[in-house]
Length: 202
Image 1 (tube, rainbow, N blue to C red):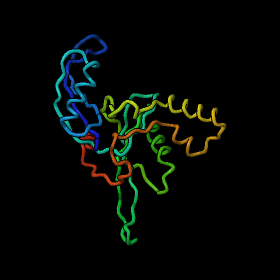
Image 2: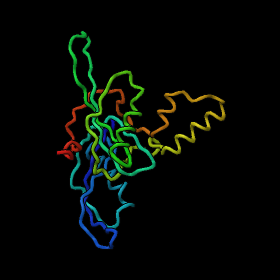
Image 3: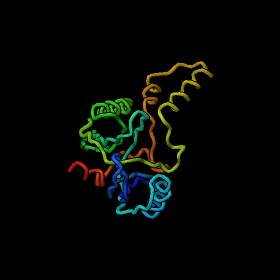
Image 4: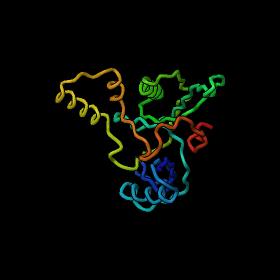
């Protein structure tokens, strides 16, 4: 089973003014183990970062879903809570889940998560929306991620070929590409919320 890991790497970065600075940046990727995560980050960043870089930290990251939009590269972490009644129907438990979404600002991030979860048959609250330092996210397979334009194009092609009509749920799902760690349990609802991303807001 694959999980999400946040990997911090340190390298010498050339700034816009031409100067060089030693920086530490976090990336998130799907991997099976910590060793796999380290191997994958070297593979993914080998062609992106000039010169040598060093992995300075790897942490398992609790994220339920990720909503990727192609109009922004800034990631926001959103904490969503909802109440769950136990099987006996007399005890209520508050469940918390973390989501990541790309957006141009906090307000748009809130709106996008709210729209993406609007088909859920439960009442939920978005309690935290905060910008995340995550630079980029690497799913386990490239096919797991589709840009918004690609998703919409595929839907339009489907309509054209089958002469069908989009329903409300289909429209909502087309607003953002959703991807999870390939092979993970997408039905799991409870999260521990003990991850590196929580430290960002402290």
